[in-house]
Image (cartoon, one colour):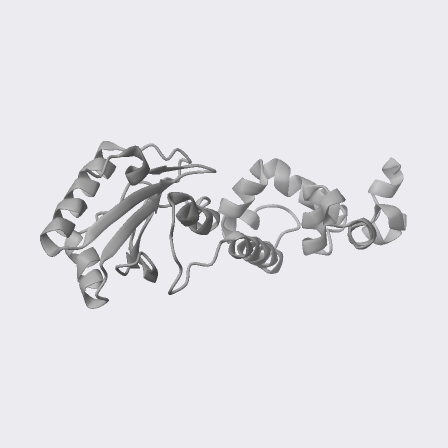
Length: 232
């Protein structure tokens, strides 16, 4: 493609170079990140095509992961991106996260920490704050329900055992699994993570509710207290 063509809108490009036409003829996997974003944007701005605006988004933010973490206000600081286009991008990214998440519905049987990670990683890995969740299980280790216990800032929010186990008692749960994310991407447990886990395990023993695991989710990896033998 010539420099002159790049300055024109996508409608003036050869069909073989247009992102949407390339996707239809060759599949989505052949498109670059910028070309895929351009399809979502649909239009660019007066002096730039949708692909050029998409490239500016990636250059400004640094990566698709950073795009997933960015808010509407930050996206709207990029020339050519208003609230409507920012909403389109965030909606598409959220759909992608949900599509990647393994369903964790009532009656699901959990056999390993990897099962839990596959479900929660897509939705937790890009959060800028920590989210503490509990999965309630019956005597056969099948899921009763999952619930968010607490949301915090970049430091672990305070989690009270009474809140967690009151929910478990109401649902007649035989066991619980705790998990939270580290926005830094590093799942290594902090001293506070370890102290909290000890308090929760102790409370569960008093109530006769087993704490089966505490998982910390990072970017592409996780730490399982049960796998590491840290719950004993």
